[in-house]
Length: 288
Image (cartoon, rainbow, N blue to C red):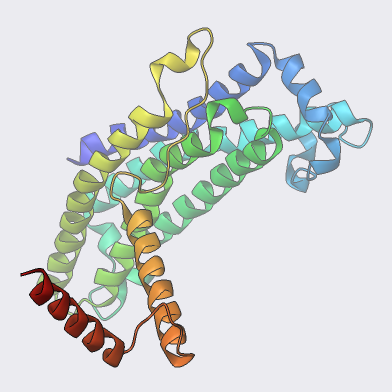
């Protein structure tokens, strides 16, 4: 399981960078200069890159709109690329710490929070934050240019598989390890429970993600004459129709109460109903 975890972490981090490369290739049709020119048209929307990355920019971002666009594109690539190198490294470190027992920390209440394993998770979280910010920054700039291919839906499905499941596992680890007792058996039991819950949740969530991927990554998207499809939220469950029907019933009830209070003739009184019934019976007797 631990060996496969290293392979999984490497593959997930590589998928993140490949998704960014996919967006860049689609936007520029394989030409990086086209992407730079496209970003330069949105120069007034571009946020300045991080200061610690200025050493890799040439020309300097302040020189022109294209220089700023090139710097922002390079920044997004670097932020996603560091995740590809850093995530497998932390996975190997976590594996070594878990195998040698060093990562378990001292036994005691809240010992997980000052163990080496916890600090590795914090470093992973920092790496995830930078990768996520780079992808989000690129999407924010080119969302209109790539609107035909539903970039936001693709963004959510890819990031949900990698980033959301990571934060979910981090929250579960903190919750169960923080509530564990001081004994070694209780600490081991909490770690096992946290891992089991995370694995069960991922197995359930992957079904939803697989369905979402089939919708947002259709093969016909690359066929000539493709038209964008719109998927209504919760359309298959009818939640919106149910809410609309409830609102209609409530509104009808309000109008009915209001009409009765004002004595509207459209809502007959009990006396009117009784007299109509008597008249109907009399008519029937005359017919007989």
